Amino acid sequence: MALEPETTPLTLSKPHFLPRAACVACAALLLSPAPGWAWGSATHHYIAQNYSKHLPAFIDGLRAWDSVVDAHVTDPDTRL
Image (tube, rainbow, N blue to C red; front, side, top):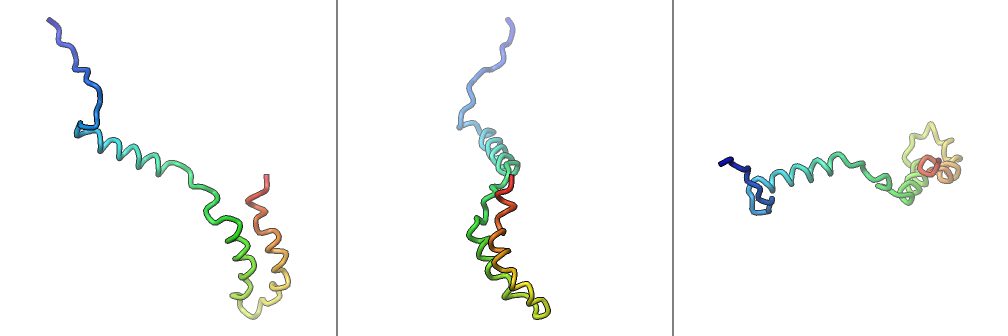
């Protein structure tokens, strides 16, 4: 008489299932790419409209470019 391996289905009541499932879930979260829309365009525009207020006085000339910076602040996000 040959011994056959036990073929019981994996259930949640098994004590070894939850640690494995937690490890697989953590690995999936860590290895998945982060979304590229974290800030969104509104925050980019806010920073572009207010950055020159915090610059030192010797580079006040950059304030003349505020509208250009604001107009092109999301170009890297939309460029193909």
